[in-house]
Length: 428
Ligand SMILES: Cc1ncc(COP(=O)(O)O)c(C=O)c1O
Image 1 (cartoon, rainbow, N blue to C red):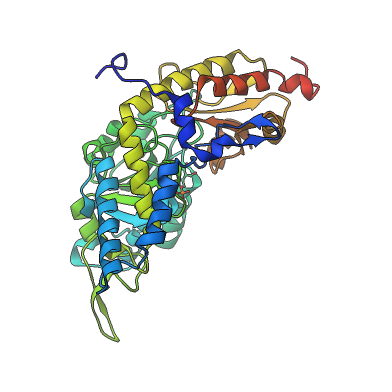
Image 2: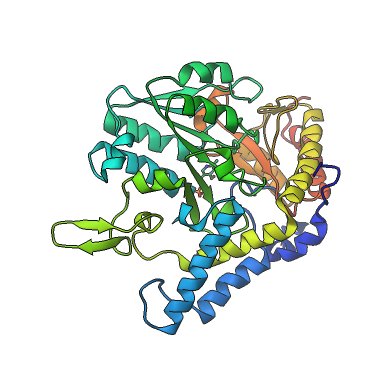
């Protein structure tokens, strides 16, 4: 379907689905432009979690009573629903507490393989001193520090693919950084600062050519783009419920079957074993192998409701709507004197995230100035310090959109910003 044929969302009407947006901030209409940090939740999602806790609350699996059976069914249905949302099968989706947990799971599982733990098949993941792990300069700390730590524990070397001045990845450099020693290529689908969609197919092709494992951080793509993770060809991918209209405390790790089967577990304990003696344990097959302990059941049910909500809107319609909003936002920001956009690559595929610096005004001051007008934006390094350093900054302002973001919201941001430098006495 071409963009012209894609149905548009009525974002103004959708606002009514999000109870939090009914409130005013200091007497001003709430303009929530911080969905990149966490999205707001539609009433259906809140209701689904409350309904589960009210009528079906129970720990899942192995209970002999009615509630346990009902909770288990809802929990496994939620897994199938969320897996389907990213084009996957239920057995390829591991519940985690969020994307940070999912990415750490992978790094620690590789560390365990390196330490000789796991089935014979896991030796393919074992790292040796001098082996290389590759990330990009655009990573959120959640997809950077776990690899730094893994390198420190194993003697592997961490390398990175640089970002160009316009915010796109330097693919020529990627082709020389990814080489015979590369064992893992971990990269974000969409930068949480730049909003630019990275070239997954190119990076997967480079990684595959040298037999490296690919790990995708899909946190900022899952809420905004129709995803088919198996079709993207990545081995593993992480995403986060609270950024895609779902609750806190739930996320997922997608993995290709043979990869999940071969990786050793990270956390161990109850609910992930077959036999246990005082000396050793055997593990269930994936995904349960990676789900030690009592799981956040009500959050899985609410996340499934969130993806049903997104499915009803249609992810093509979501992307088309947010693209219109994003273009209006970027065009308006470019016109404001003193505003410098980070990663303003011409023609780049983007989601509705714009980060910028206002010359002469600290990001925190910009944030407070906008907040006084009811406009909620993010300020700081957005957990991407190396990327900010690359652009010569320690902090920026970030506006990010969701399905309920309207053109009026963007105009409120732009109107506010138009006056910020004068307010702080900075010359235009
Ligand atoms: C690109 C990216 N990766 C990872 C994370 C961490 O996600 P979570 O909050 O689920 O741990 C975030 C959250 O800000 C993010 O934007």
